[in-house]
Length: 319
Ligand code: AMP
Ligand code: MG
Image 1 (tube, protein in one colour):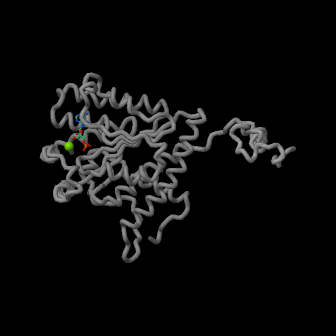
Image 2 (cartoon, rainbow, N blue to C red):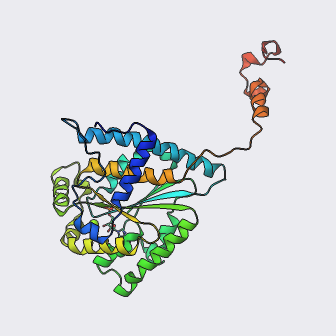
Image 3 (cartoon, protein in one colour):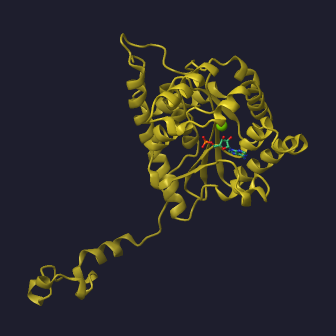
């Protein structure tokens, strides 16, 4: 690629540009081509290999993300900063949530990642408010949390399948906005991403799950039932984008092309992490004293010293 930025500054400027382009409400969702590639550099050399390019770009973005993630983690560890980040991934079945976690989140340090997938609520969870299980799954200070599905299922699958009365799911949009607002005030950065695939692409991915014995375990007969309600889901997603962008905006990532999807989500995350202006914490240590303490082997308890080093005359560093 000829207009490839090599400068960190430019990579971040591009991440911000991608973020601007992916901001979307229901009107954009209706128009957005799931095969499109917003923000992708226009100039491409002959024989451009999109998948290879994306892999190396995501790798590079992963390095920049990892550097920021480490500082976030260090600041929490030092007790100077409670900030944390939450990536919310929503998509219809086969939308690529798992693949995104593997490719983008996988490029970061797993020690600082707090991953949670949401399925149908358990018996216990159903006895609480729908946000109860969500609150319990929030990332601790210093972590990057990732939600594979989220509280938004409570206005998506729940609405489309009529699992609670309309009067109940209708008020949830406001409840979600209040909930997110309170968390943001408390230092959470939320990045909400809808992976947008086409009906045709979903059909192909479902079929390949069925045909390939190594993918068959991912196939769920209920996915076909959801596929029949495609239009209702798109409407429900549209309402989510319009009604729940008040506290933290939604981004819609065209996701028929997996290589674009990974690149776009990595850029989104980078734009947000960079906005946090993370620096390593100031640590209050008597460094000179501690260094001196480390220099002498008196720091090592006698019993822990190897046998050959215990007879006094082997000491070489007497001062
Ligand atoms: P998967 O992501 O393929 O493991 O599937 C998880 C399933 O759990 C999906 O079919 C979701 O629709 C369903 N699910 C997630 N959250 C809820 C919820 N709050 N109520 C009902 N079903 C849910
Ligand atoms: Mg399903």
